[in-house]
Image (cartoon, rainbow, N blue to C red; front, side, top):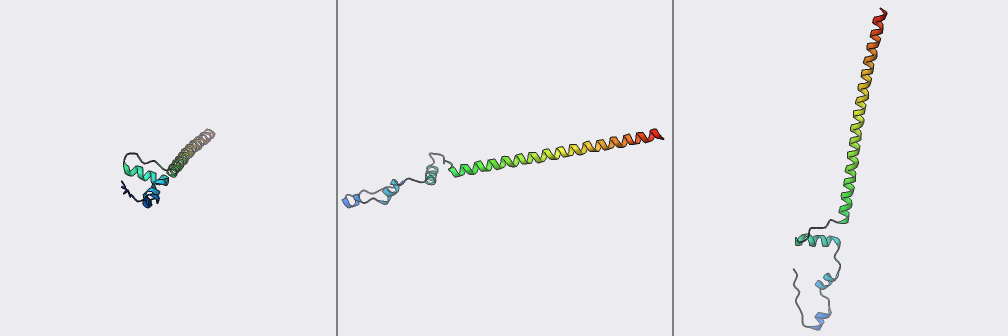
Length: 104
């Protein structure tokens, strides 16, 4: 808390003090956040840029998660196709072996 001394001279009253000038100025958003946080009465308000940053982080994370799911799905599909081809090749070789055994 800042205490301001009161002067009785008219000259002192006519000139704005540094404290009055600071009080007349509108505080920036950052200053308001610091004041609120320091007082402990009010929780600090997130800045607009902080919110934008958080939104961007969440969007990037969501995209990375989606990409990772796509990669996992593609790997699973590739393994399923490979397994299906192996079963088909084995079946074809068994059919070929059966045909050869019938011919002999």
